[in-house]
Length: 143
Image (cartoon, rainbow, N blue to C red):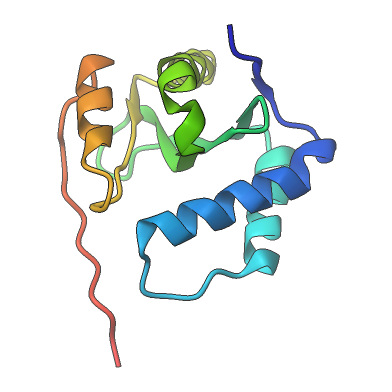
């Protein structure tokens, strides 16, 4: 059984390193910023409506809970989820379950997840966990 738990201040640097790895794997068209990643981690550690989960130093899941902009319903949304490749099979389902449990505790009627285009296997994991496709996001560099 994996040690999936709420992150603490002691997890800040390992979480930023995992976010750096997620950024590199995602092939995002902008540079990684450790300062921005640290600020993101700090917000998720400090605010009650934000979640910061870690998993044995090999995974991080950041999420938020809020009112949906189009309906009178509370929902949770993943900010970033990354599990090191060598740990994915062991931790993915357990981390999703912990996220869903937190979302339920936050009074959310729905929980959302996103997937990088460079990681199509995420859709398989999400569908197996009961998630359904609702929207596709596109990104265009400007300038």
